Image (cartoon, rainbow, N blue to C red; front, side, top):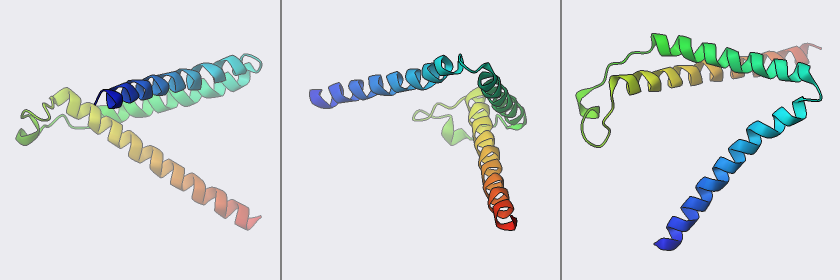
Amino acid sequence: MDTYDIFLYVGYGLVILGAIFAVVMPLIKSLDNPKSLLKTVVGIVGIAVLFFIAYSISSNEVLPKFEADPFNLTPAGSQFVGGMLITTYVLAVIAVVGIVFTELSKAIK
């Protein structure tokens, strides 16, 4: 059992290290081209605005069975999860529409 614990902690560390590199390395690379950094900031701000809109329209209702011991879901947690789900749905629809539009525009040319 100790081996599993060690590998879990190593896995956690590698995920954290990968996340740090995924954020820091593009920032270092973008110092050569500040316009690319501006596009990144606009994208992040757009996703943040989309999340806050989704968060504001999501419900904070929690069913009684989810307030119990295994879940301990609060109204704030429920609203956060709802906002994340709505954001995911909207981004998925935008991606599918973008793919269809790109393929149709290539077929027309």
